[in-house]
View 1 (cartoon, rainbow, N blue to C red):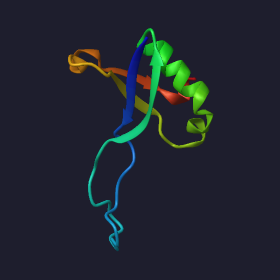
View 2: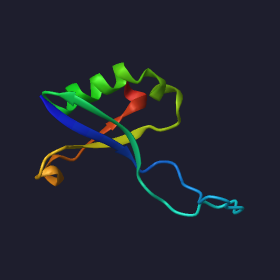
View 3: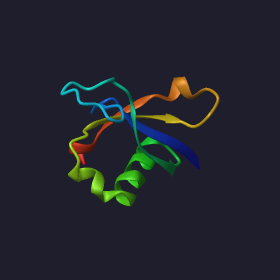
View 4: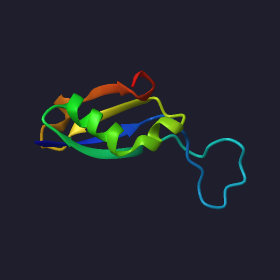
Length: 82
């Protein structure tokens, strides 16, 4: 079994005590970590374990295998397709 980290670039971040109506910075947000034999299995496990994700506006998420060669394992998934 492998561990995968799931992230999204959707959403925005405001700094503490910000009064701006515009986001202070763009960043990635952690969606979760899941285990599976493949990325697809880990994504399915993530969605089964964290059913509340379907209630958020996040849709496009991507994952990396938690390994030294993680950059080669990037894969995109879409919550709304589930």
